[in-house]
Length: 181
Ligand SMILES: Cc1cc2nc3c(=O)[nH]c(=O)nc-3n(C[C@H](O)[C@H](O)[C@H](O)COP(=O)(O)O)c2cc1C
Image (cartoon, rainbow, N blue to C red; front, top):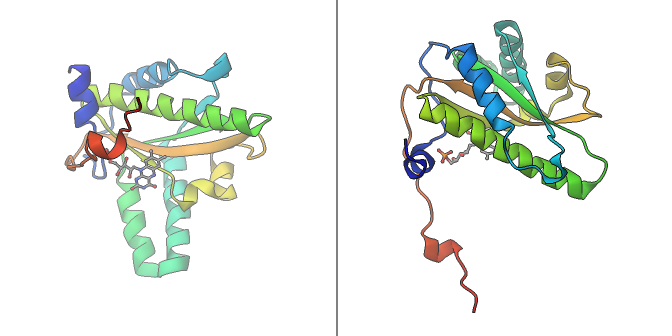
């Protein structure tokens, strides 16, 4: 795929086929993610690949949270949906000392996630980046064995072969571009 087509066609995927993409492909996507720009070469990203046991535990944790807020039926519905997701990855960033560095490291992690997503998209694999409430709970940190005083969860990434590809839109250049003299 040409870069323009890749950038335009990549979509956040919500529905996946059951088949899990090969591990070598995901490892390569992670390796390529790390070629993202990062100020002062902090390489702040860390990647946690979840096996089925941990993924199930995260799905159950999320379902518990949904049940508490919206009731049993809603929790069960979420659990059923999350249990079907084939690939799970949590991206964290190492907590830096100051807030400017934290901002820059978060930006770098975002670039890394985009690298990861674009490479996989070119290979026919879709990704969804989520930052739902579950990603901010201490229980999630416990499940992935991460100390919240040293790392911050940037996102939970789901990946797999898309069942369907949503349509998306962007604002026109006139709405977002300011031309200065
Ligand atoms: C930092 C970040 C957090 C996101 N969190 C969520 C989320 O929690 N739930 C969700 O459905 N989508 C989430 N998304 C995906 C966006 O909703 C999606 O990128 C947007 O709708 C545009 O669609 P596209 O990625 O197909 O272009 C997130 C995206 C980013 C960059």
